[in-house]
Length: 137
Image (cartoon, helix red, strand yellow):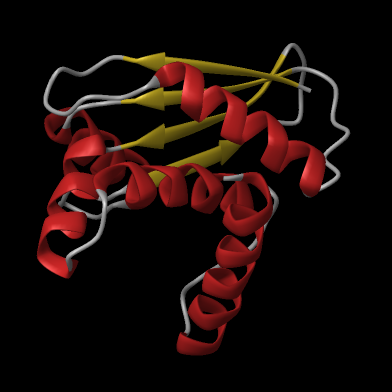
């Protein structure tokens, strides 16, 4: 799979090369062998809110949205809010770059079908994120 990374917002800095490297390593670690392109796009809060409202019927911004398509050449989109990552990092005393990396991995896990709607699912996803970030980050 080819991973395409783009920054389409100006609210928070994004090192697209670093995020592309992380995503590529994580794809290999997760043994994703799908043919096609997965687009990871960093977007602003306003656009994230509009997409969350349109597709999930939640009238609020969110941190990550993942869409999986069953067609080539584009097999999915992962949309990430750097502003959400920066706010969360500040509120919890974390490094912004680390939180942004977590969002990339979180989006990939959602793309593979993992959910985080229940407390048990959230714990499982967090453990997987931690393992992947330790090996790939």
